[in-house]
Each structure stands twice: as structure tokens, then as C-alpha cells.
Image 1 (cartoon, rainbow, N blue to C red):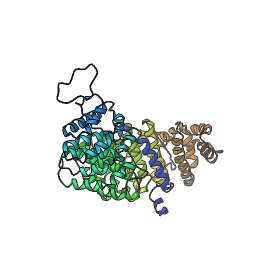
Image 2: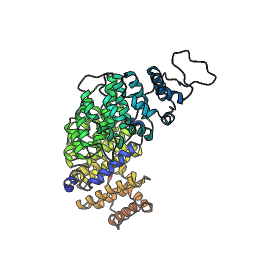
Image 3: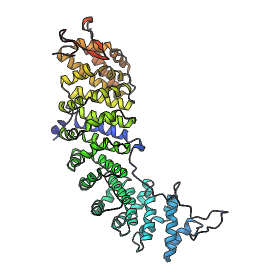
Image 4: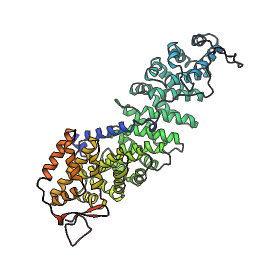
Length: 517
């Protein structure tokens, strides 16, 4: 099994190496919360005012009572008088739905959670709605606050209310479950344990209002979210056909949440990636790469990038769907995170087989990768460096020569050795090691060494002998001792600078052809 997996991608790297690299990239990508889907949402009432009586303030002219304290609200919530119970519960809900600084902890301390959980079984849908709204906003808080709701037994009651005849109650229950599931793996699995996915699919058999659909898709995305452990595979696969349909929905919010859900599923093992492919998601994801909303492009691109970390056949599915046709636009995006993820996606493709690398060449994307190497934001440059290094590991000799001689990648690639990032430097050194080995094998080591020195790369390499990172130092020392020990100078072998590329002429009768064999 291990040998089979190793054959999927870049033969010079193990599956665990590639997986760890993908995890590192994903963690870095998700540090920017504004680019990620919200895992919790508070139901804010823009008209909410404090139901507590303010000192020196006139009495309220409305029929809504003002309470002197939280204790009074709780006392009325425990009353036998239905009108008092409803008004007090509504007052508590309004406090929790204030836009700023809702007193979640204070209300928890006063015992509101078990009371509201009890009200979820009430015969009055109005009371159920107010209680569900209050619990939704408590569950939108910290993990400790969310766990208070979960431990009070709210989850099975909310699942039961998903089928309520009151659309308001059903929708608020979906919202509450979304907040609970979005808190982490523990609460997510607790929500799934109560057949939430199955109930949602039953609900989706009928036409539902747009706002309800939006919350359902968001809940489903949170049911697919979080790792260590990942959600149960059988539950995820159960939801995939519905998510695949939502990838074709015209609503931006639904598209966004559905794409995030797929990005979570594909950020796991090959079996889950295959399940996404089998559900027919890839053509829709590729189509979304050209969407005019970045909020949709980001999760669609991340999903595609995750899929091409899988097997060669899984990568071929993405290539067959035409994903590379969208990459030039993405590599030229004004948003750095999109450029970075596009370069990361291409690096995973170039970690595949020569046929997949050829698709990237045929699409003309290496010219854009060079532009990223030359002037992109540093994180994008680092991913672009991986694109090149992976070609030197997985590509044919002719493909590698194409990058050096035709595309002119050597100088911008080597210039990144000046980076202060040791991991980036190691990526460059790995690629250079492959290039020198190829030059040595093909019999033009001296010419390549002169070209390398001619672009100032040898000077940078020698400076790296002083690098603090031990691995960098060791690799540099080995490279210098192996390839630059008493190398002779030969002016007639020096490369010509033609249009910013290095032209190596090994046959005077065939100039401008690059490396000839």
C-alpha cells in the first residue's frame, strides 16, 4: 500500500512529505480569517435595546416591560404565567442579540441555558423560537459557552425542531446547530451523532426558502469542517450529492459555503478526494474558478488545489475539467492569497508525472510563474519556487531544458537564494541539486556552471556558507565542493544573454535552439 501511494506523486518525495507540505500551506492560508468562512454566526437584532431599566431614565412608553435586573428576567422565565414567560425570554434573547458586548456569561451564570433548553419542548412555537434564538447566540460565543449549550441537552432537541411546522423555529434550530458544530470536532461529532445529516437531506427533498437554504448549507459546511479527527466518512459522503448540487446554485452565499464544505472534505485522504470526484463536484469547482466573487474563488481554488495533491488519476480529473485555463487569471490576481494558492495548486500538478507537467507547459503558465518569481509577494514566490523544483524532480530532461533555455527561469529562481527564509532557500537548493546532476549526466556541467556563475548565483551560493541553518550550510558546502572545485574557465562556452534567457549552444550550426543532444 505504501509503495502504491508513493507512486502517486513526485517520486523523490514520500506521501507524508507531500501531505505535510500541504498541511503547512493550509495552516498558513487559514491564518487570514477574513478569507475563510465564518464557523459561527450570531443572530443580531438591529432593533434590540436593553430590557433592563436604566437609572434616571424615563419609563418605557411601550407595552414591553423593563426589568430591574437579570434576576427578575430569570424569575419571570420560571413563572407559571405564559405571557410573563414569553416576555422574559424575549427580553433575554434581545440582550443576547445586541450587536456589541452581549452579556453571555452573566446570563449563563443566572441559569438561562437549561431554562431555554426546556422551552425547546414547549407547545408554543413563539416560545420555542425565542429560546432557540437565545441559545443560538450563546453558542456563537467561546468554546466554553458553546459547550454549556451542548451539555445541557440542546442538540437532540434542535435536531427534532428541524422538522418543525414553524419555518422560523426550524431555521433558528439550523443556525444553533451550525454554531455548535462549528466549535470543533467534539461538538461537530455530537451533532452528527443525532442524525442531523439525514434529517437535513430529508428537509431538502422539498422546496425551502432561500434564507433557510443558506443556513442549511452553512450547517453542512460546518459538519464537514475541522480535523483531528475528521468527521466520519460515511456522514460526509452522505452529504456530498447535495453539496454537489449546491455548487451550481445561483446564490453567492450558498455557493461560497458549499465550496468551503468541499474544501474541508478534500483536505483529507485520497478516499474522500475520490468521493468528491465521484459526486461530480470537479467540473463545478473548476467553473467557479472564473467566478467574479473572490469569496467563491478562494474556496473553489483551495478545493482544486487539495484534489491535485491526490493520485495521478485524481489530478488528471482536474486537468481534464480545464482547471489550467483559469490559472493565468488567478496568477495575475490583485489578491496575494489567490496568487499564492494558484501557484501552490500548480506546484502540486508539477509534482506529478511528465504528462501533467506538459499540460502546464502547453498552457504557457511557466511564463506567469516566472513573473511571480520576479515580482510576486514572498509567499507566492515561495510557492512558485516549488513549481520549478518539482519539475526538476518529476519532469523529463527536455521539460527541464525548456524551463531553463526557453522560459528563462534560472535567474529569478536563483535570486530567491537571497531570501531570509531557510525553508525557501532549501527548496531552491533542492532544485539546483537536480539541475546540476542533470547537467553532469548530460555532459554539459561546465557550461551550466559558467551560466550559473554568470547570473551571480555562485556568489549567492557562497554567501550561504555563512547561513545559520545547518541543513542549508551542509547542502551549499556539498554543492560547491562537488561542482565548483577547480572548474576551468572557458570563454567560448559562456552563455549568451538573449532576451533575458540563457542560451546554451552546444552545436554552432543550430543556434537559438537551446540544449541540443
